[in-house]
Image: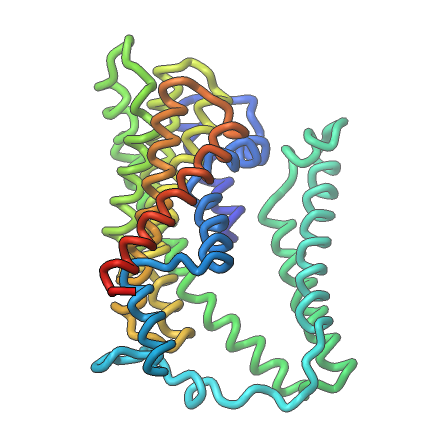
Length: 354
């Protein structure tokens, strides 16, 4: 549903800017290199895991856990007692098949669904077929295949009873109700902003000779602030994508460029709130299922989120100024991330007299 929703936001952005002839799936893939925040967050996780260059409240928590054996600070209130509320794990031998095969089924059937629905809609090349694909249908088939594969493995190896499988399946559906509600509300926000013609008003304020230099940086920061304040990346994308694409298109006149760069920028900023906003559903769920104090989780994540956001902001400014390829910018950003992480870690070690 995530990819399908982003495709729908790209479509709305193009409709608002009166851009035609670009397949949303093409624009989506084109936007990925500009999603600096997500790219560097993934790289940052690996960097911290390998180097152990923790900093901020996380470094303090790590030191407490190592020296005192305390996984919680004094006075912390965990959101979930994992052992008590989730119960004991199944008394079965762990198998890689139970994890790998359902995921492979999801990916394989979804990709086949993209190709099949795209070929049915018409298109000579593979890119054309993917561009014409029905993403929602393909993702539905993939999810259904994943569920059937998981149930088949559980039944074949006698890991679960049929009644337990159905209960687990229904419990999973219940967990998705919140996501569905958020989707409906996000679409509602998008519809309201469209009917208010907010994008038309903002675009009308832009002068004909306006510079593109600060546009990516501003769009990224505004998306960050909205996502942090509202706690929803869905709503942020619904608000910002129909605004950002017309702005870039009016300044540059390049349709594909405007869609891909702005989509990547908005999607990057929207994830910031999911990462560390205290009212984001993903942040709350992370606290729940890790069994941690909610505000402790938020406070440990904010310094990391701001670090990757800072590097991303620098790259968005450089790109807006010089249009340097992401293939060059991403390695530069990684170097900046390493340097910044090391400095913050050393300052933290000095602060705690280590």
